[in-house]
Length: 189
Image (cartoon, rainbow, N blue to C red; front, top):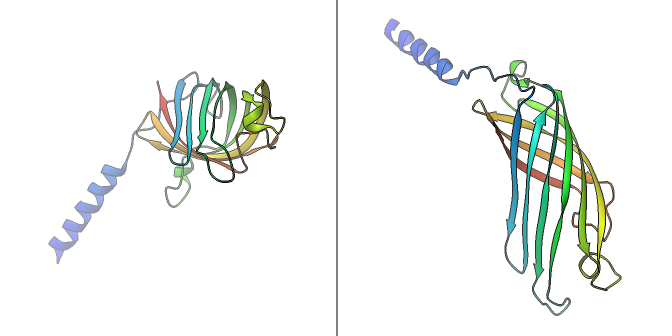
């Protein structure tokens, strides 16, 4: 019986040792990359590429900026005609971590950081695709997105984030519909 408890104790402490991760380095002054992309193929094809570079102003506040490109095409149906469009623009964000290092006080590992997120985008859209005017001229559409999410650290320098955002300028002229769900991978360097 003593051997059984000894083996269980050794396995338990060995498991705890394997689960322990080194303390993450201070994020202040560090850059990170968000290689955002989306691909959906079918009767509606949607390809989105929006890589951003972020910067940690301090452990709680980060800012970022990057280009944004969307390609959409619709196949002809009895109700709509075939169409394709290219959307381009720029976007920037500010993210503030309300809770950091949550794994230290939560009984289970749900997330590391809980944050609020604000994003501004300026997109060049075609009237024929997103507006009811019907001509082929392009116009700039500003979009203001707000929401929040959480980060889960993977190793020392990477994390996965899950966000839910709302476009405050939602209209027929917007490429988004509310709510907007995003899953992202952040690579620190």
